[in-house]
Figure 1 (cartoon, helix red, strand yellow):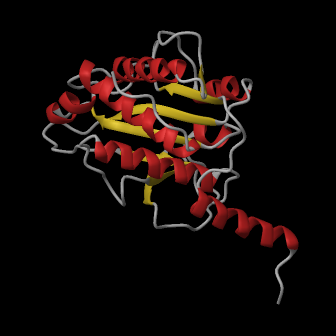
Figure 2 (figure 1 turned 120 degrees about the vertical axis):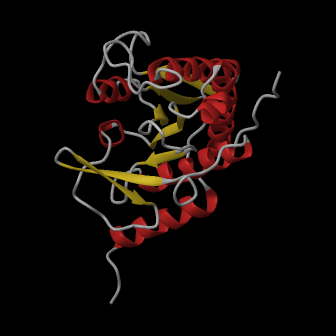
Length: 239
């Protein structure tokens, strides 16, 4: 039985994204950098405070994008010290007509845990920008691995679903469409989006590599290279 035309186009677009990468317009591309937490919400505390790490990484990434004429960096709130809920940050992103969003976060684990490594969460299967988001997540994982990070889960890419107040982590091999919502910033933004957990703020080794002052700059460079890979532009040389 022949598929309806709409279904045929959907699966063709899925194949096209997986083979050719993102389906993009022309530069400059509008990139929203969402620094997780801040203000009255400091996030996780450990060797470093999550909100301070995400702000430092976002600032370093913005600097790379500002120097590159292919990109226009955008933010989701007026300052890193201001408080804004995820839905408010998504609305702020949508108001700026973004081409891509990266939400920067840090992971944490209980005292005594040896948990470490990078993982990221694209928009989940069944959402409008899932394929593009997953493709961007692959670029992020590759860039972070090249920078020396260990990848958690299935190649550093996972999905998150909320069942009430309970958060369920699912490996990216699970492609079934689910009704539960994922992270609000991913669900509500009108562009491809990925939430990145760049390191465990509770791990001395992780923080030294990717959460310290130098580590945030190293991570920002990896994120910048991933954005360039997604849009198929040549990164500026490192200084």
